[in-house]
Image (cartoon, rainbow, N blue to C red):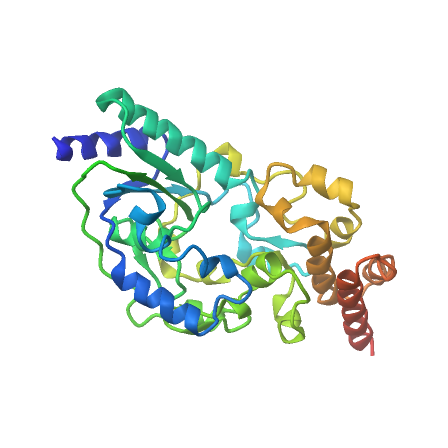
Length: 350
C-alpha cells in the first residue's frame, strides 16, 4: 500500500538523520506564476540559470520524465561548535561566513544521504524510477518542501518550520511512484517583520519578496563583478553569505544543532582573522577550502569580499598594511575593492 510505504520512507529517513520527510505532488502552477513575476522584474540579477531550462524548474515531469511524486527532506546544519552569528558580526576584525558553509559541502553530504534512502526503498519494493537533487538542477526546492508539509516559505523567502526554525538544507527525490501527498502547513509569520527590518541592504523589498541584487549572499557568492559601492559598508565583515534574517527569526529559538560532524567548522572558516585570510595565496585558498561550498567563488572573489570587510574593519596598521600588500594584485577587480577599502580606512583615520 502506498500509505504504508510512505510511513516506511519517513522511518528510513529519520534513521538516516533527516529532520523530516514529506511527500509533494508535482503541481507547482501557483509557484510558476510567482517565479515568472519575479524574473520579469529582474530580481534575480546575474543568476541567469533561474530563467533557463524553460519550464523544467516548475514542472517536475519535464525535468525527469514520468515524475509523479516528490520525496522532500530537510537536514539540520547549524553547527554547535561555531561562533554564534550575533557575536561574530560584532567582531569586525573577524570574517563572518554563513553557517551553512563553514563545514563540508552540503551538496555531497545530502546527495549521499538521499541515495541511501533510494537504496532503502529499492530493497523494499525493487527498482523504481528516481532522480536525486540537492540544489543541483532546475528544481523549485522551497515550493516543493512547502507542499510536502516541511514548513512554509517565510517573509525572508526561506523555509520555516515551527519546530526546527530554518537552519536546514533541503533535498528531493523525483520518482515515478504514485505516493499520497502531505498537506501543507499554514503560514505562521503573522505580523512579524524582524527579517525585513534587520536586512543590512534592505534586500527583502516586501514580505515574501527578495531582490537578490541587494542580498549579501548574492553579492558575495553569485555576483562575479564589482560589488556596488552602496552595499559595501552595510556588508560589514560578511565575506560569504549572510545569516541576519535567520538570526533574528523568532522561530529559530526552536532550531536544533546538527548532529552531523561534517557540518562542524573546518580549519580557519569559523571566526577567521580577516588579515590572515586576506594573506592566503591561491594555493592556500584551494587547500583550506577543499571540500567546502566556499571554493566555488574562487580566490579572486574571496579577496574581493575580504577587501570590503577590511575596509569596514578597525583602523589599525595591520589592516592598512594587508590592504596595501594587494594594491598591485593582477586582478583589476581585487585592486578596485582594495582601493575602496583603503579610502574607507583613510576616512576613518581623519
